Image 1 (cartoon, helix red, strand yellow):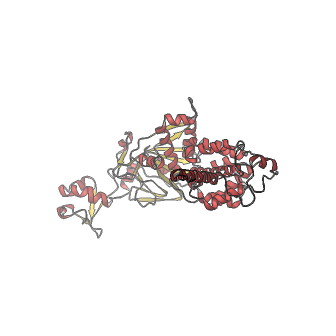
Image 2 (cartoon, helix red, strand yellow):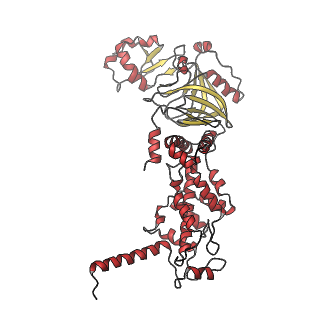
Image 3 (cartoon, helix red, strand yellow):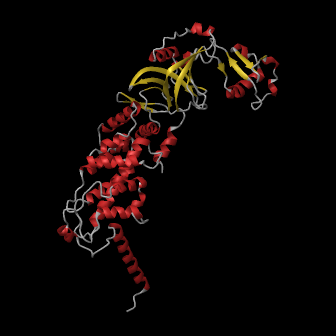
Length: 492
């Protein structure tokens, strides 16, 4: 009998489909005929090894060695780390094979922690939690019609998928989601040890940033999510924008954590400087930061000294771009502001004898300088910390500006309220009895540098959400940086 070509093609495709499904549901066995589920249960020794049936460890090894394109494990997010994890010990980490058919306490604890990922500004689906829970449920008991090795295959798939999820979650907690370097070997070894001794969740959470800014924000987020009505996933669904706003600021702290016990922190959107000591706010100062057109950068440095009665050497960009047009119109504004102009040989020049109309921004070869005095834009104090942006922390004669709510007003440097109190605190911190000049004395004194024997770390950071005593505080995104970060985290 001749079978029509169309029918034979359908039979062939059906046969290939059945063959492919069998390849995905179980790994290959090296010896012996297929053994049914009932025979496996009857013949299985305590070790779970049955002749002709692949072990869970064998399935794991085959998948990680080949990762065939048709295999679902091709989507591992921490593939190199997962391989390293099982190279340490080839046995499964999270469950036991027949006849026990159980998941250990570490697996249950890991799944529970992944379900709480919202508390840390992370999303459980990013770690494959729905699929993991489905696999867990399928492992409750072998199916009656399951082919030999099918249960071992699913247990191996669950074991590898959970390892991948946990390693990825641990990385994201420590470093953030934007950067995905290879997991260091030490992290893999630590996870193996934590699973073995039952301390998995504690070990994962211990990798978070330790600075109080991160910890307070994370705790405030968890408290907000715990408020009724509804579980955290429903709260996130109803208030997705608010959740993402908090989460992206946790991401900022993971990318740029603070490790020192004492430091100065300038939060740019909050217009605030905090003196931090061992998780305690010791001082608060209002600050003025850069305008959106000339933003204050984020950086880490150390305050090494401060200057009393400073001289202001006008930055070249300000002199050539902003002052030159004014000089071309009327050079008298220099004298009115206690400014003087110097040539390339550091000789003071009469501004009325310079042909400013012939000078351009590209040919500007002069230095403009302002001596100490009541109109000096640096005020009486400048706090210096090395950085490639040439920004610093300084006083200002325009102290009325600190009363404004929006204080994004400078060219990038930070103006600080009550700088004399800050300088006195820095001296007390190291037992330095150097007397500080009064404002009147500083105006008549030459510049005086005061070196710090114990340079203090300073961090300029950009956080649009903070928390203190469990209360969330939201600030305006003055430089428009939130949206780009939101898209990087949540838009595929």
